Amino acid sequence: MPRILYTFFDAYDLTGKTVAPFCTSGGSGLSGTPETIGSLEMGADVLEGLHVGDSAADSAEDEVSEWLGSIGQTE
Image (cartoon, rainbow, N blue to C red; front, top):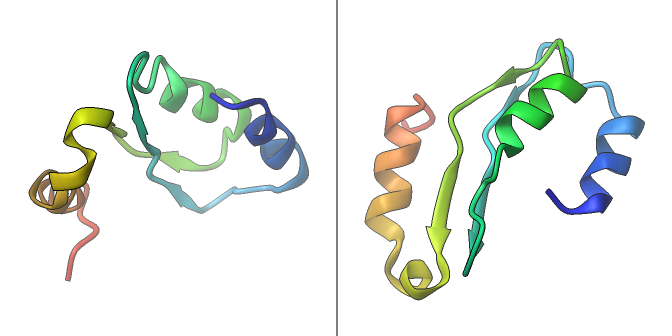
């Protein structure tokens, strides 16, 4: 997880909020990021995250839509 996000989580209390982590990258993916967020924001509901590899980022619309549906974040 980028260092700047640690600063963000230190500055904001997300108690009662839902966090849905996602990223694009060519390497490590989420690498435990949802668990890290959960430990920093104990009162938040941290959902299953999504990693889209850099080679799939240009055509990830279906994958993102499916993920959003799986976490209950679609209309």
